[in-house]
Length: 367
Image 1 (cartoon, rainbow, N blue to C red):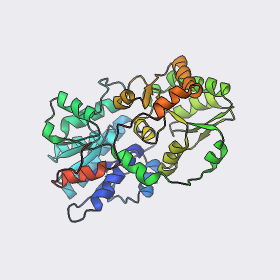
Image 2: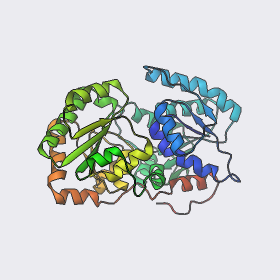
Image 3: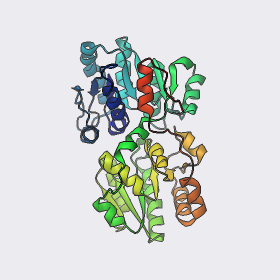
């Protein structure tokens, strides 16, 4: 059984669901979604043609972490008791993953953690995701680590090495089916002939003044570079929207648009010049498409990209964001160094490797 509930999880779990379903002689694959995100989750399910077998539909207006945790924990019990899966696969660092893994632990059902072993070692950054990820790894039976660094993190914590499998990241698998030649979109047509900057910002720890500082830095750089246009698919969170409206409105070369479906979003990354983000998954996706990423956070659980040079951790202080953003626009050398750096996150075959492990086979080629 695969359990997931948010848009980022769905992007990375749908390729795995489809891989397992493509092997009916080996697996009976059951998909359970929690609906932690609703509209954004459904968009991804449609894009990958994944039909859930169970939908807990927990999302409610103004939901809190308490609501999500309790609702998933209580509502998934009946599903698990009905299906009695041999293993439950959860992904990454969401509250859905933590609560589902805890429910499995209470029912003595083995858990496989997809994207295991990522760490910042700071439980408050990202919050609550760092706790969720570490907690799932305490409960897991199988660890599907995307990189050797994440495997080493698990070994350092005492996890058994024979249960850790380096597979690459399933998010890269998704790009193989979503990025398309000849893709067209009205917003990309608007940006044609300019250097396109893609912005995403939504992290809880950045709400308020940190986000305002980030946006002010972006605004300053845009004012100084008339050949640049920016598109910001904004998060649904009203706190994010309030800050963006206050700091970015009135600049006709910045477009704030509604959240994009996954196919559109991946093609926007492919069309961009560089990406500014506080997201996690984009730190893997953009380097796979040769796009430099400025990470507007103080920590990252994906240090491989920093080491390889595809990511730069710039924090949230206005001057730091401004300086790094300006440098990539003004220095061809700095831009080439990041855009040509190697991608450490996989080759697009992680789902196949995970399926091989679950089927008792030796994966064809570990990274």
